[in-house]
Amino acid sequence: DAGVTQSPTHLIKTRGQHVTLRCSPISGHKSVSWYQQVLGQGPQFIFQYYEKEERGRGNFPDRFSARQFPNYSSELNVNALLLGDSALYLCASSHFGAGNTIYFGEGSWLTVV
Amino acid sequence: QQQVKQSPQSLIVQKGGIPIINCAYENTAFDYFPWYQQFPGKGPALLIAIRPDVSEKKEGRFTISFNKSAKQFSLHIMDSQPGDSATYFCAARKSSGAGSYQLTFGKGTKLSVIP
Image 1 (cartoon, rainbow over the protein chains, first blue to last red):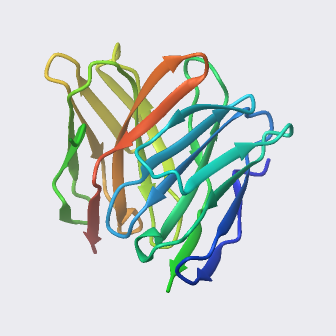
Image 2 (cartoon, rainbow over the protein chains, first blue to last red):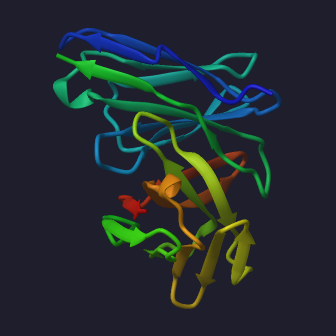
C-alpha cells in the first residue's frame, strides 16, 4: 500500500507569492494533518482535518489555510510568503479513533527567496 | 511554552551501545506518545509508540519506558548500529474528541553511532 504522498517535493518561491502543497493520505485514512518543520527543529502543528472539517489549528497566521476534499486528500495554502516560511512541510494521516497511528509523508521542501 | 522537553540534543555512542533519549511532558491530557526517526531530507518515520497506561513497550531493538507519575518517557536502542544514526523525536498527542488531535514534538536528538 502507498504511504502518505506529498507534492511537490521541492519548490522555490519568491517573497509575496502564494504556494499550494498537496497531500494524499494512506488509503482508508480519513484524517489529515499538516506540520511545519524548520531546519533543526521538531515539527510544529498547523492544521488537522477529519471528514473534511477543520478539527484543529496551531499557532500560525491567517496566511496559512487548508482544506480536505471528499476523497480525503488535502491542500495547504500559504499566501504572501515570507522568508521565514522556508521549511519542510509535512502531511500526516491516520484513522480516527483510539489507537490511531499517525504516519508522515516525506514532505515538501519550500524555499522562499 | 514548550510542552515536551527532549534531551540530550545530541548523542554519540559506539556500535553495540545503548543510547537513551529522554522526554518530559507537562500536559496530563496527552494520551499517546510516539517516537519518530528522521533521516536527513526525509519525513519522520514512526518507530514505536506507547499509551500512558503501559510502563514499557518493546519492538525489536527499540524500547519505550514510561513513567506516568513523573510525566517522563524514554527511548532505548539496544545493540545500536551505524544505520541508526539519525535524528529522533519524541512526541505527545492530545485528543479533544470528535476526531480532533494534534502532536506536540520535542526538539529532537541527533544520534551518531560510530563503528
